[in-house]
Length: 101
Image (cartoon, rainbow, N blue to C red; front, side, top):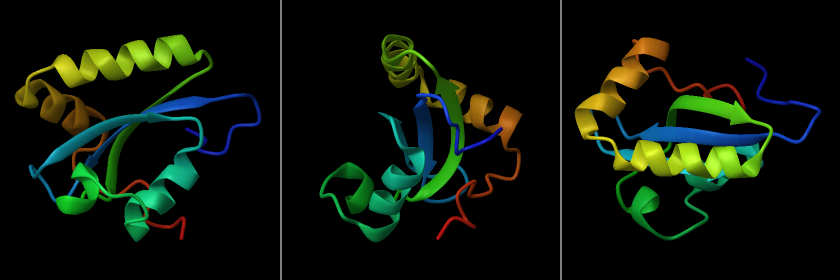
């Protein structure tokens, strides 16, 4: 999966602070810029308060409407279902953005 797509891409992503820790679901047009914001604590809020800066899951979309719909869907899921989704793509809960900065 390329995180630096040349076409217009929207990302739905899940952050964690540690394996099986707190989770945050978000949507963005620039995953790299958004991860910089999470890692530097540039924005106040839930993700900063709980140290959510480990990118553990992401999906890309060409259409913003589909991305927002998927974000809404994931936010409505039970925690256990989100954890299963993360484990399927990223069993070790590695930070997918660890080498970006």
